[in-house]
Image: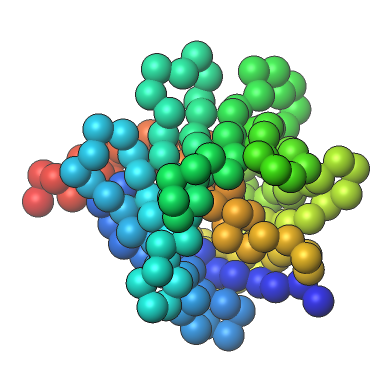
Length: 174
């Protein structure tokens, strides 16, 4: 059975903490935006505050790159924006100790899928919620939910860097 999560897009910003909810609206994961770091960092925690993984921006990369690390700081995956994506946005996810993933779709409309080989393992969509700033992540069974959620948020941050920077600047100006 697939698992659905709910993420409020306008909350994904460095320096902000936010929650990922299940489809019943219960908080299941906390994402802690670390602000006092040289590079962007988001830390995923369970309900007890245990660190599960973190997303880091790779500095000085030729193309947009984010790294997902496990709780011990070891690389789980590296996400890179594809250089050529003629009709759709695309990211390649190199997963350490597992099959690689491809994220593809219309990122602006928040409608895209995560594939492993030819098979879809997760779908991201705004159409499941009435709120315009909320999107859902539906993950197939036997997937690493935290990894898929981290990939989803990293891609969102990479797809909308100007929105995040404007929001961060507004917060600093207050």
